[in-house]
Length: 354
Image: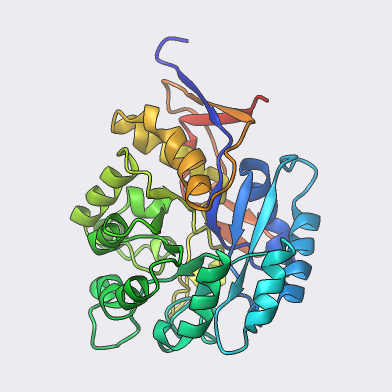
């Protein structure tokens, strides 16, 4: 056991995940269901999930696809897609019935399956005020789609132009800045107690040199894009700090290689199989393993007003880099999907213990 590190933490939650549908859902759902207690499911299907009935049906498909090894407490948390099709009365009824957890805003054209999104977050002020009154959280893909804005600045511009006015005009609204990629995202969370921020494994561990410096790596292309080394360092510092406003969301988003290795690359990184291992290795490298439980297991539940897990998992880091984790998986139809995080998975294993 020389050099082996072992820690126990409360069962983790994933506060941002894309499970897709049909064959892809069948292939990827077990990875999330095996590892996480709560999984906040993104609604950007085609067509988007805009009603309680659609959310309930999607939840049923997820649970059916979760597989025999799913955690007993695995719970899909369903979000509706905030656009002109969303009916506020239906949203309230869905939340009251425990089907709907939150609503997600996508700027139209910002990322995968966002064509049905809105032009401006401010256009939905009436719905947002209703959500604030009912305690329904707003989840935001914070990215400007203005073609005149540099791709690496789009998070900051969206926050300044669209998010800050909403936060300041509706201070009772609980908001999450999803998949923070810049210091601007960190700052808006720090400056507003009602705002939290989810952070992904890839934004924690990669910068744009990983994406671009030695040949374009399409498997690392996501939205918002992986940013500079300085931004990554700031994000990692926030995640490993004592600041309770930042929590774990994988933003795991699978695409077949036919869409990832194409003339126009699809945005999304599939990291669900090794997400915990990737984050554990970063925290280990930063001497912050004592902060891991708070980041992956406590802070998200606290932000959303939910009970923390009572079940535990054990994580073990081997001294030797001798594992052989799979670097891709296939759907039933044969579509291959690249998996992010194999290097960390060569070091780390985990198991549910109670």
